[in-house]
Image: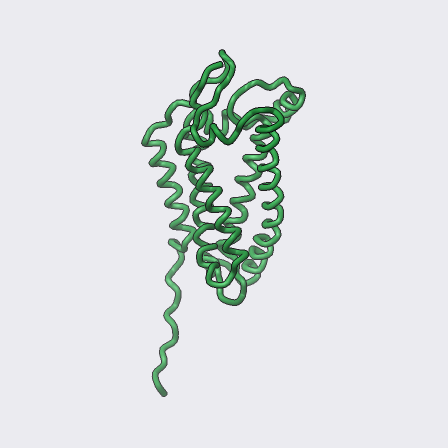
Length: 227
């Protein structure tokens, strides 16, 4: 056996910050009321992290890149037959990663336009018509339950691999390192500071747009002339 660097620091930070952001978003929406301000903040945090992850999937280190783990149906079949050998996300796990990224993105984006029709409006509420606000709000609420299901499946899969297949998936996501058989797997390498800064810049740009950076300022409230 040998030890390799499997996950780089940006991927590990992304993963655990996403856990915090999603947990915070779920908790605050259940609390409601003034906590909805924090629900919006956690939602924007999710969007920022996802934006970073998508860019990092193209410019990041070896095992972080989508090209290293996104495979077609034949790879999934080989994995199910026990013929796949590799490190990082397996072909079935890759589908889970893509599904979670897609659903988190759907939740974050629809939340930008959503409204509770009482006290809370998403930051891009003014950008679309009331009909679209209603549609985005409906999608946001419906996708919530699908999200719970995917999160539960993800946790169950981690427990299964850890306790049944004796493949601890959590430790490498904390330390970045993993023991693999000799001749299997390589260090993930380093993507470089320029790639990291580029991903951060794209993420910041997405949040600027998501918080209304392209919208005209709202009209001033009517003035009471005292008549």
